[in-house]
Every structure is written in C-alpha cells, then in structure tokens.
Amino acid sequence: VWPNPASSIASVKLFSRSGGTCNVRIANPLGQTVLTERFVVKQGINVLPVKVAGLDRGIYHLSIEGTSLNERINVLLRKE
Image 1 (cartoon, rainbow, N blue to C red):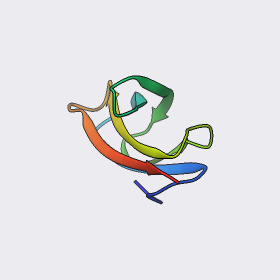
Image 2 (tube, helix red, strand yellow):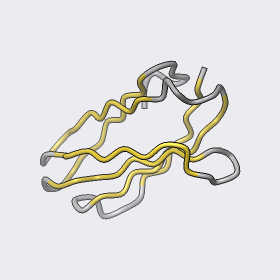
Image 3 (cartoon, helix red, strand yellow):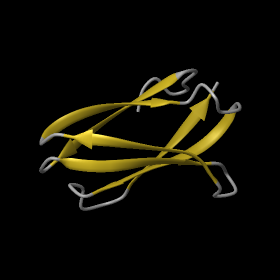
C-alpha cells in the first residue's frame, strides 16, 4: 500500500492467480466498515486505486477478499 499515510488515494498492489473481482474493505479501529470498493482484477499484478479522501485522519484496517484470491490480505493504513 502506498503512499502510507495517504491523503486522497491509496494504491494497493496485489497478485491474482486468475481474473475476477475483489472487494477492498476499510474498517476503523472499532472494526466498523467505513469504506467498501469493488474492483475487477486480471491475472497477474494489479494496482487498485482506493479512494480514502472522505475518511477522517487515523489508522484503518484494510482487507481484500476476492474470487481470484485464496486468502485475506490485511494491511494497516494511516490517513493523514
């Protein structure tokens, strides 16, 4: 994830074994979902532009799940 901290867009780079869709979920420290975005991914390396401009400053938990991803990816994201 870069830049981190982010102000308007956080880019998330991931590898997908096959094409499909994925959901990016951002949760606050209480575990409440504050943002969800759906992306179409291709086989190979993908860069997802996640819009974080509307979030308050703070630390967030970012998770990615998808049809072409076999695992959940968890990242801490700081909003400046």
